[in-house]
Image (cartoon, rainbow, N blue to C red; front, side):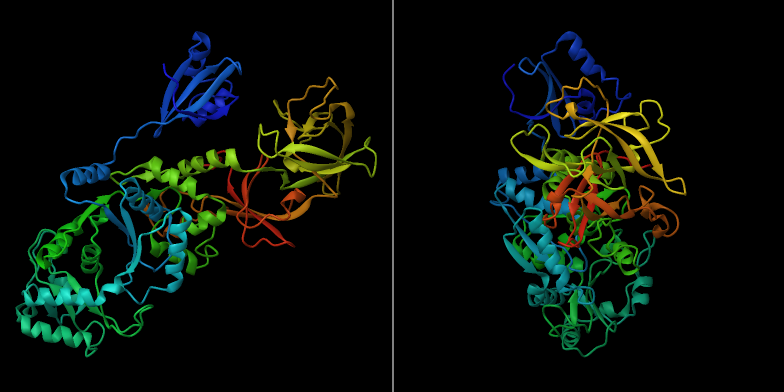
Length: 618
């Protein structure tokens, strides 16, 4: 077969590689059947599909082992891409124009990231354009802070908008469009209370009731609407409604409200307006004003589409079209802005960017990369049916990237001191260790001395079977250093281990080992006199159940009480001392970590971005 377009991803332990390819079979010592078959039959090339990629296993004569590769594969079109390609082919549009229309009443979450990647991604693929439009039609809940955060999130994800618009830019245009419907006898001012309007709307099985205000003449409605704009009436005293069909099966078509009165200060227009358009009216008309060819919404807007089309048809304006896709629902979190706001206001989290939150700013602070989120959005695809995506898939996307890019660092989270009795007091050595596995050109120096810290969990007095770390009389190798043996255990009055003593073997130095000793375990360490103190925040799932929004009772009852553990006396290599916020590392054997914004020269703070493997107890 011809040489495929490939990129070398992994090599070494085939069991690990198989797991990366989606294998979910027997334990570590049992390779998947297809790997065993490849070995036995000396198959030169074998492929397996996982998600949107095809992975290959092939035998490398030079390396004398099997290698995993990821091949490029032309993906099939999703249903929106099929629509766009048909529209372009049929000449219904010369250039596609999409939009991302967030309401500036909160921070964007991972569900918005899917919409951003879709809208901007389509424009990039088909040489179109995407507008960023802020749906600022509710002055009570909107703030400039949210506007700035949204723009920052979109840019961080790697996208740039063609134009920045606000629905408030079109308030005069929307007002005139409403006037047009009034003049055509297709809109009227209703004096009813909200309760009366709701009661007269009927039910899905019973038609609504046409009240007396529906019979007002266009002239009277126009006068009343002008008085509403002039501020003559109080909040809730009058509304403008579309006159469609109070018996329509679709409840959204039963004379929906177009405008309501709100005497509130707007973050952009100030006090100029006291009437504000409802989303259903502002949405389609703003799309039309901007010439949006493909208005992409989530599935909850499917029943709104007839109203979207009704406004455009009766106003005789540019015919934007609405298309719906499944929103992103992810396990162990909530996506509702209302619920997220509750978490923030009630103090369950430290803020919108708390790393346990599903907001884009929280993922950024936790240490996620924009590219891993884009990869995740690409992998989950675009569907027409709602589903629940396992957060583990997002974590896999991140691990695959950080495994290849995050510099390694030794950090001891729960330290216990080890003293080498046969190592000269006052002597230190500078040892070289790699920043990335297999990269011998870029190394760093670590200082070795008589006293060093190891992880408390790397020692036990009563080792179980297959224990390859420290125990009384047991030997291990220190990462990039020497083989040591534990000879003596020191405890305090409470029986807690406070110090370990042992022996090192000078001939066992990594890279020039001539000791003849063989050990199965390697642990990390830090010199006592050179390690830097750091605060480490271990983040886990925010909720204990997969879908807290669907559980009976208050969703906050399922908050994970162990979602944050703070270790105040952790220790890290001195090379991390000057790291700036956002710098990512793999703490060897502990996981991936990121320098937090709270970090300073006098106080290092690290967030756990993701564990080395999925260890959450479901």
